[in-house]
Image (tube, rainbow, N blue to C red; front, side, top):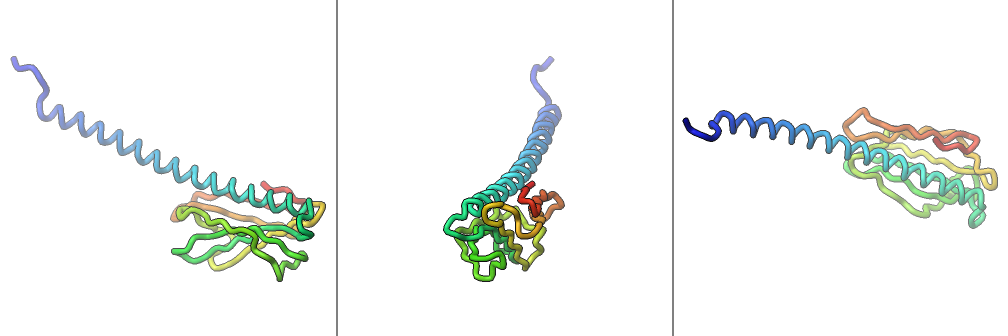
Length: 154
């Protein structure tokens, strides 16, 4: 009687290990994409709250807000902290700009469009209500950020 494993038994064990590794790898990739979406949304909320705080403090005498630009691929969508002398924001100044990771895509505003959210001095209320939808590129997964007229950011 021989001791050891047959070739078929070894191939079966290797196949099971490969399937488990593949499933784990796919799960890890999906989890990383979801985490990138969550991080992108939190970064956007932080920029909105920063703009709101600057407006409440009347920093440099400006109204503060955020400009979101959904640019066509292969460029990355961007968000910019802006300062404006009035709520019309026609002569706004870009203070700083951030870019979303390439796997993230702004769904709202739609491609080729720009959205501006400005906050009122002292009260921190939004000049207009806005909905921002940030999603994963090539996927239906998305997170919605709402800015209400009373200044709430959810």
